[in-house]
Length: 242
Image 1: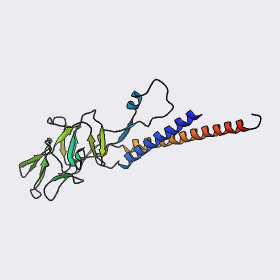
Image 2: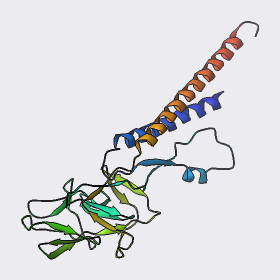
Image 3: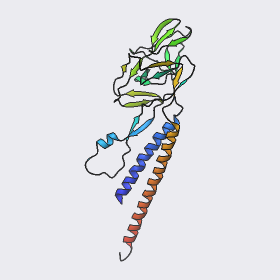
Image 4: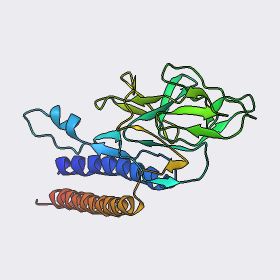
């Protein structure tokens, strides 16, 4: 009896975590370059012992690298990343990586993210443009040309596939392994005048939300049934002559 209750309660804890994850994904279906949270169980299973365990694991939350769709914006300061690269900017506590290429020029000429953080080049230096220097052209390599003069280059970085990502804001990540600058732009690069959408598929996430909600309700019913059986057993054993 108690084992069933432990399983049911641990399942509800896991499902509650899953519901929160899905709800956050749904809330960001319109967030540029948002990366969804997915639940993985490989790490938990690898630590399982030989004896059976009567509980449900919540799994590990992993930030997905699934890219969003690219749409044309017409803004010359917007760049979409083609391939698996990342743009880098100087965050408050170090370098942060993002695929949200909605850029802007600060009054002092600094090239910034839409949130106001300085964009950096492949060497980690900030990029400065002339606010009054005319139209900006951004090549596939990230090279920035203004008034026929190349004045800087947006850095494009590769984050190792086995690196764990920690979320920064809605679209930024910080890896636990160093990212390296990309020098070959045959596969990876930038596309000026385009932006990347959210990696969250609204229909898929809503389907997951419904399935998780039903599973939570089913687990709740199981717990109630187990508690009822336990109460009946106690009541019967407590009757005179039993």
